[in-house]
Picture (cartoon, rainbow, N blue to C red):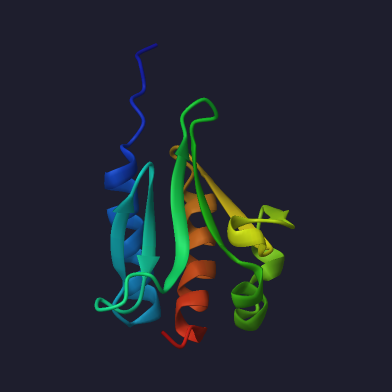
Length: 122
């Protein structure tokens, strides 16, 4: 049994960004921020973030989070893995977990975030 090396956060964020962009058919940009990446729709205003991507090495998974209100508007809140009542800035957020080498959880997250991207007015 060999050692499985987990994909880097930067590589995962770029692959995820490209797949969301392709699925929602609108530009999606990514910006590195400390130990995570933010996804946003407007190149001129990277503060208008619709998703955060981080990595949990010990659990061998990536976490994608978005505001709950955006997920409800997009009709994808029920697809989330976890609800966090006081997420970033005290607003409720939803999390999607993508386990290493799990195509199904990846596809579920891409589908949900592409719909969230489409409903954002950024």
